[in-house]
Amino acid sequence: MVLERPTSPVRHALRARVLPSLKELPPRRPESAAPEDSAVRWDRIDLDRYEVRANGSTVGFVDVVGAVFVVLSGTRYDRAVEVTQTLDFAAAIRSISPADAA
Image (tube, rainbow, N blue to C red):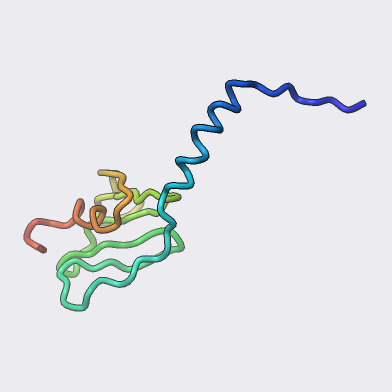
């Protein structure tokens, strides 16, 4: 005896709306290193995490979650606080860069 799960028209409608929008999200590749003369620098410290430093001190972290950059402000990752989410890496870096490091 084979049991089939009944299909829901609502589920199919939701899937039909969500899948095309997921395909529109930009693909994520590792970001290139900061320019040598930049006051704000970032290094990839894990498969999906960057550490951001300004004037030699850690100011925050950027986690890559799918197509979204989640920005955390703080000197230690385990105590950092989420400040924003964005699809643009440059905007993520700007959001935790101190004004005097520009």
